[in-house]
Length: 186
Image (cartoon, rainbow, N blue to C red):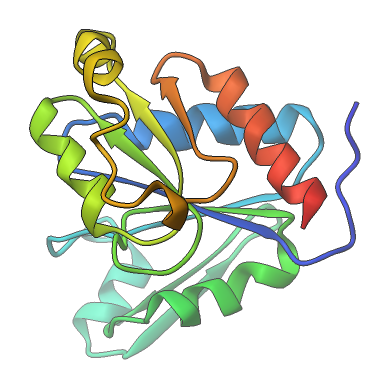
């Protein structure tokens, strides 16, 4: 079993367009890290207004009454609901001391190491526009395109991390192993 380290948490973004498998990838990587005894935090960017609480509950009623922040705690979990948006840095700061790994779904423009999820050829444009790419996780149907144009997909391969890899979206274990290697070398 791999033991978590005492250093800063590994922070990795999983980015891509809608329906490319971002949430599934975050979930599979979370499972791998948990099996290896890591404390995992996840952060998700939602482009819509979401409902975190259930209408009729006490905390929902607090929010409906106008509370700016509502916290709830039980013997097993804690939640904080705010009527404002925090930046990615604020969210990371909130959870970093309680985690060994932080997996971020979305926030494409942030500068953290990122895995790009690609389902269609049009998704590959992210390779040319996003910073700090460590891997491209692609759907099986995209494999012929990847193999045929691997060298031309990149604007300047020198700008990419030396650990950049093209990986099948189904190879969660290889992606996990790559993230462990990056974390152990940092």
